[in-house]
Length: 239
Image 1 (cartoon, rainbow, N blue to C red):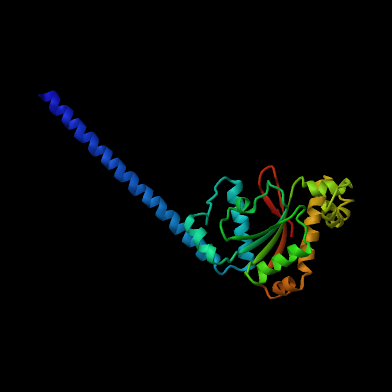
Image 2: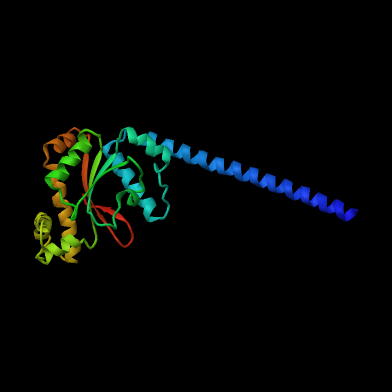
């Protein structure tokens, strides 16, 4: 009899403990979701009226989170997806290389609708890329444009070597040639020097745009160059 009572009590206690555990887990889960929702709302509120300097700082801070493995992965929820389906107001634009190892949203820890991204081999400012970035800045109100080159860029390396390439690939190398020429007499790694010089050449091309230069003069836009290290994920500003 005592054994049966003990077993019944144990079963009741176990069931109660299990129920409490499930309830606690449910509450904890809801708290986590709520905290994430609040964090998302705060992030969006902060990005509404950024200055160009603040927009650039937001990119740098996002990259720092990426490098230190502390990503927040903001604005990547189904709610955000629906929200930006109606309109977009990216706070920053990126002119980056088409290289598959440099995905801007991941590198800068951003989400849907945060970045206006143009990608082309060698991160060159062609007429089409400039036009796109003019649209992103003038119409969508992006506050900063970052020309993002990267370590060991294949297009830059091919330009240095004077590679004979088929089709339209040669037009890419032609656009990179000026950066290669500017870096010829610099000490150190030839490819790295050329990559950085090319970034700065493309920055100047963007700044020569009538639309972008006016926005810069009005204090509504900042155009900078940056270099991405493939080995550690760090972005370093060049200008």
